[in-house]
Length: 402
Image (cartoon, rainbow, N blue to C red; front, side, top):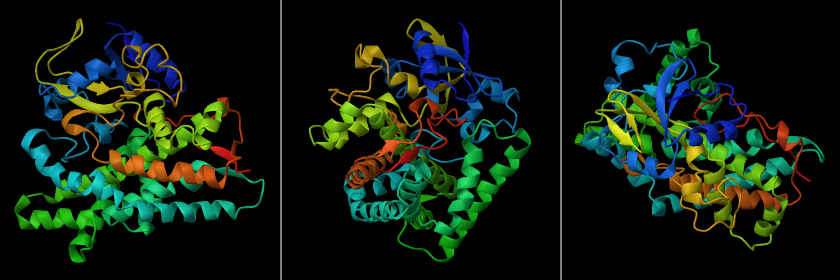
């Protein structure tokens, strides 16, 4: 099996995803830093593996970890071993840690957040409208970032004063370019910041999910301090990064497909289609780390060996022709059916999927209603991916509002 090295600079994600698909449903890959693992790259096999109990989140199953081959200063260590939370456990422990979060993020409860999301969106658009006419705007920094960060922070009870520091630390956390000597301190700083937030909520609880997690622990659900801190970090990280990319990628897709932009702006095609097609075609999450095989697992004609690590290559899955037909490589907001798994599948499916869809469903139509003549300020070929193996993220999205 030929090993495919994932590009730490993410210079051609589409080409890399195509090579992964061509390698078959199970590809042997090398993560930045020289760490070997496998990737599932086809839709049907991914759905199967994501519900296979022989694949677990316990890093101690990983042979390379047992042998001491994974250094603690590996740039992706925070994603491979983020501490104990619902992301890293299975079975009863996973259900215990996930229950409160899932209950807070049901479709019905998320819908109650709509008015607040609309108000935040309007405020962001008002700020954009107040800028000097003709000024180039980074839509990612000025619009796509503040909305999900404010929404998830309000949900979790995180003060906006912490946003600049969170942004700085998460930039390092997700990047493959963080110098190894800075990784341990970055991880310690993240833990310290979220510990401070949890301690403050313990002293002064509010109507937020962090306070609910603390209360549940005190009422007998037995969440440890480590589990609460790590759960808070997980939700803040996932709760804003995915939505930023979803909004940015949707705008970029519409701006490079003007006929489809006309269809949605005229009302011929609903915004829901834009969101789902963006999730499939230019998924916010390119690769998700990491599961471990407790025994040999057959994947098509290949075998994922016992003790090996598996990542899920969502960028490859989204354009799998076996699932989405011969036009899988095309952006098409009229695609039907559009059955993707951009938010995962099985027990670990993203509990924040409804929230992310709602935020994008409010933000995108409001943006184009306010600025229907919005245009990219640079050629699409000049849009640059950030060096993040897990997130399909641009450095910026320069636009002219029109």
